[in-house]
Image 1 (cartoon, rainbow, N blue to C red):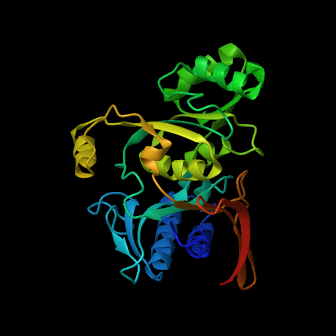
Image 2 (image 1 turned 135 degrees about the vertical axis):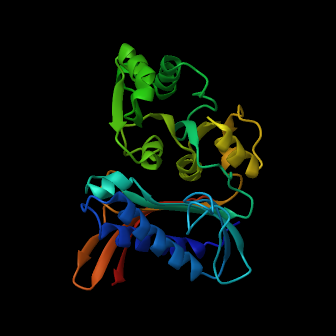
Length: 313
């Protein structure tokens, strides 16, 4: 089990990454906004008394100078933890000063998070208090919608499906529209998209579609804490991606991952708003302070709430 004291520290990591990134919101440079978050997140993690291994990061060592997969962070030998990061989920959203840009991190005990390669991943998620297997990644979208409607005692026309607004999802859109179901299309930021499916405060009943595998592991961390269901499958497209997967010990590319395959033990998940959004409010700066709001979750402690903090600049 993760020490509950780690939660406050991980909140700070996410908040300080979000703050640094927020200084570049609306500047039109998504790479600079991302790099600011990366630098801040790495500095904070290195100041912690942990030995943390990045299992979901900014890419391979040869393409990501910081927060690369396999990088060891922290100033202690214990506790040994695995770290998954997306310092800025929604880089375009931050660059254009649009809603729902967040800084995201999750941690687990060593060896408990899926080490997914930086490839695409097919995903589906729903919220808590539903029958096991109520949706299936291999099932037709219309059947999944009908199952969700039955389980929630709703009309299919009242079921809302969230997905990235991409051409590759047209068959999902068509299937949902044929039933008269509602769509919530998002331009970027599919970690938040998945989380919407597990929140009572959201109209979203199910998240589906293809996005990044790293974001999938982060989303699964949150969904586990929230008591929802999550399934995924890696999409491996070329020899380079095969090599990346093999390097992480993945050889079965048809494997359907369930939630406990992706997040095996205790997990802490934090996402701090960079810009205002449906999940959390963005960074607010006044004089020599900044205010943050973090969606903070700790599985074993049954802790899930929005945490507001103020920091000196």
